Amino acid sequence: MTDSASEPEASVLSRIEGLRDKSPAERHAAVAAAAGLAPDALEALSDRPALSVSRADGMIENVIGTFELPLGVATNFTVNGRDYLVPMAVEEPSVVAAASYMAKLARAGGGFTASSTAPIMRAQIQILGLGDPFGARALLLAHRDELIALANSRDSMLVELGGGCKDIEIEVFATSPIGPMTVMHLLVDVRDSMGANAVNSMAERLAPRVEEISGGQVRLRILSNLADRRVVTASVRVPAEALSTKAHDGADVARRIVEACALALIDPYRAATHNKGIMNGIDPVVLATGNDWRAIEAGAHAYAARSGRYTSLSTWEIGAGGALVGTLELPMALGIVGGATRTHPAAQAALKLMGIGSAQELAEVTAAVGLAQNMAALRALATEGIQRGHMALHARNIAITAGATGGEVDRVAKAMVAAGDVSVAHARLVLKGA
Image (cartoon, rainbow, N blue to C red; front, side, top):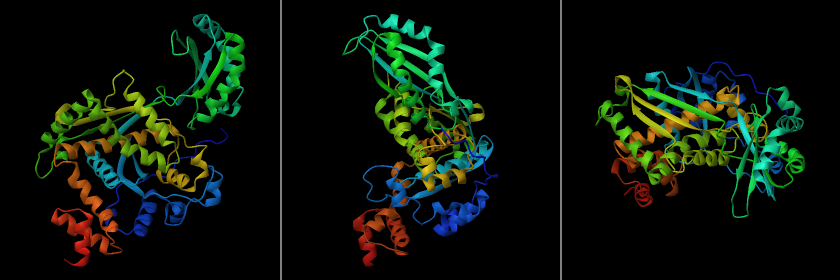
């Protein structure tokens, strides 16, 4: 780890009136102004290619080009009393709009609050060939201070920044398909990095000494993506009246959301889709900031099953005064230094747009977006159903598929929504003037 956290940018205004009605170029200028940045500071988030093939060739193997996703900005977010504009890279219609609208409703209750634990990642060292796995555990614990010091000798910069290996834990599996094994966990404070390289390097460094102490053979030496010591909690309290729709009063909507969440709490089939909706908000932010969305997904779903039964990552309740109260808790191993966050120009610009000052701050904002997306999905499911709003936003994609271009896209999309028939066949009829 050779980089340090950037300083947070100036205060951001996350409320931008009429953003959806502007052109992409006008939105770019409006977002830059709201973030207090010069427009050229966000050039990597414009329609110009942000990632050159030559730079991509240095990031992964066998590069033949680059692949782009739409990049939107979620507005209205207030997290821990501070406004944020949130970049989201995603192909699915309705995600950015839904998150922005729920963030607007949340402002009636002061926005979102979030907290996070220290950025502790864990590496596992698997030890085989032991006749006395519990005895090996005792020997390794007796050398705890030596092993921690040896691990920290691998990354002096991380230690200087206040991080480094803080402790070890030892698990013993008396039986397994290959016999008994002992597994040593390194608990490492990785500061503002995601931490994979740091903890993997420490595990590699310790392997020979672990074999000497235990008398066994080390096999796996790698991080765990179940970052259960690096957890974020986000919460929101929305006054019931802010949830009102034309067909339902706010108290009814709040009750319906709680009832919808109840199924996800008890049924893994519903929980899988419920949690996918949460990740609809989280993954686009993770991707836009150059972080490892696959690691976040793996950790989230493993955390949802930590009791031995897969369940919801969020809970929704009726609080004081009839307010809707939502809480989301999950591991969030995000970084703002190293990896693609420093090699991808668009990821750098995304972090600059958000004005993020630490990896923990990024994790807290990202969790808030996940909670907003969850509220949007539950609100839709509990009232009008998920398809009505989703298909209205999906109509533009259908229009393009049918051959619409330029101004035809909006005209065809609106005609399909008005007719209640969002399909390629109907779009083609509209294009033909039928």
